[in-house]
Image 1 (cartoon, rainbow, N blue to C red):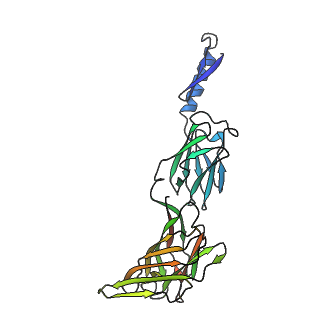
Image 2: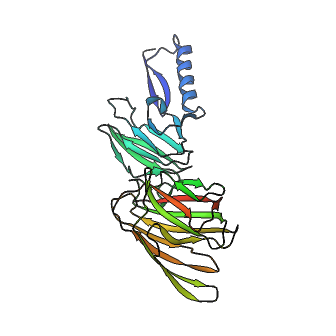
Image 3: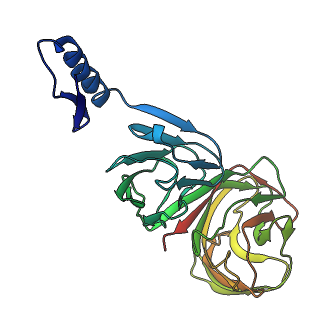
Length: 304
């Protein structure tokens, strides 16, 4: 048997004497067929970084990490990628997967990221050219960055790894959390590293009660943003959401809040943090001497 040729994933013998080499030729075809239709195998990755390898061809790479992850496509000088290679990736973890180009590699749609349970195919379209093709929800306007559970009877909770260069603007929801005191405000502060910004918050709000009474609130403290959420009564649960613009960029962070509730009030609060700095975290506080219990904080990034 002089050699082999592969068509559509199945290897066939070429230039062979089928009488003399019949058994070997049949074995070659059978092996090629088995490889082409084999049950998919997986490469389970749990680290914060990963570089694709030749052994990933024909497999599905599963990413599983609670923090952000970066997956790099290396150049052909490092990995002898076959023509038309496709790499399949599924993100099983809460941390967002970001794709990066290795030295000399060009990747179309590098802004494409994978939130939890999203998947994509990376298709080699040239010598060192790749295209990311989302399979499930990857191109939606909002992408889940992370979720974090609020503990039991905590006076504050720090939401880490919330903001990065991947997104400029964010939407944050706080759901099903209980305040221990009636009308206990939930305060908001920006944070980077181990430092919390405790000055220069400005805000105002307009609210209404069930009986149409209209009022307003303004900054009474510059130590944090108020008016975004408020407990209805002791042990009763509350939910609210707010928009954040440019928290990671070195600009002033603008904050718009929805769902200010308490004593039958509901309204809308706007404000900003007047310090032009970059922040990657934020803090939620029980402001009026009580605490927070349970519920989930979800951070969504707006696709650029």
